[in-house]
Length: 238
Image 1 (tube, rainbow, N blue to C red):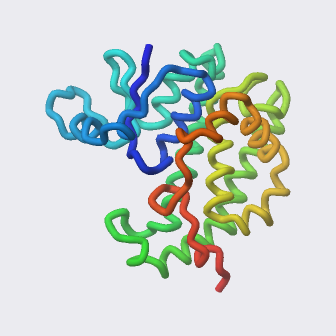
Image 2: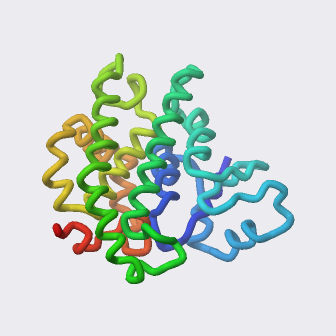
Image 3: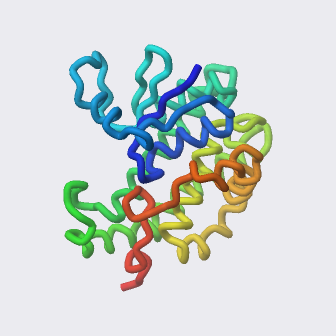
């Protein structure tokens, strides 16, 4: 099957969590909006879609049109060999992905704490306060949680779920990458507290297909239009 991924053409965003799974599996897919963003908008706005997605990313797989990153990965995981075989394992992987989705929302709110409809420049004082709390409390809360999950995995601390790579491992790699971009000083200071998380990140980065993807033009660079944004003033104290 050739998958069609629909996401905004110029940013990694939430679509990147799906791209990483497709790339790791060597799946046949096309990033539609990078070729024709209008096709994505027509699916969002068109009345011919009986079950329209709310927003990108969404994935066309045969007759299915699946929205929401975690939902897409729930579908792809079993089909691409990136999820456990057992129902309990699949639910656990999905639960971890939903927690990652919560974290992604909080990252977004560090630079848009009031409204997505406002420019960052229109909410900078509020963003600075929100980012300070995120750096001091929320990053340790989330990364500490994933550190404990790795430590408590009965099959070893190389993966979040079981003994093999699963899609939440790929997503946690992206979280570390994004946090290092958005908050480089904070991550340089804090990441030593999460050795298992960082080791997982490094193992994922070294996987042949992921390494090839990261070195290719298919991997869009982080920028200040995406979820992970680097504004130096959001790491400033006071």
